[in-house]
Length: 263
Image 1 (spheres, rainbow, N blue to C red):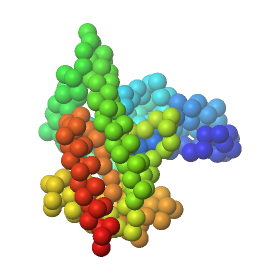
Image 2: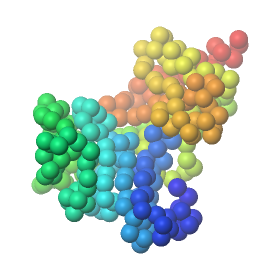
Image 3: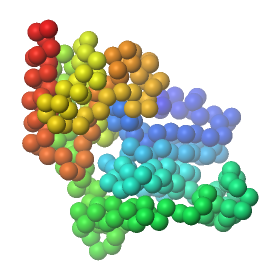
């Protein structure tokens, strides 16, 4: 969203604003607080897709001011479990498409049957893992501290990878300029090379799992003309990634470019 034109984009006619908190491709983090503030001026509801943000950022639902926030535990080391955080006043009157016998009360009105208890247990384990990385006298403080520790580790590796990819003339990195908040996500293309060729190379020769494709950002991929070559190559960092892995990635990419430049 072009925030300098936010008053023209969100007007008195706007009823619902749906926005991604962080891009699944470029990692760019949106200014949700600013978007929400404008939406509330015109009494519009705000729904935030925070799937890609929650593994990297401390997300405070009340501070953001949005009405609905959606994410999934699989992004922060848990199971495939969808999470919807909804303001109680909205949730109470929110119509839900469901079978008639399903419960009417919240939060059960979103469930179609027996809850996924094993996944809920996995969610508790995932949040406990993050909490154990932090410090503090309350669970909230430990979770915030744990996320800050994750961010610091990822940022250290991010700076190295960004410098490396930006230094290669054969590589085009799709990433916002310096000063723009971003997650440690790197989408790039290599001149005249299909993205699947790159990821297959890393899998076969370096035993590294790197993804290729449009990553659900199909419209962006069309607009940036990357689909004819299989979309982007994308790497993303997590707390378990190491400096040794980054060095191996650099070694592999240099070897790939060197071999293919002689074909």
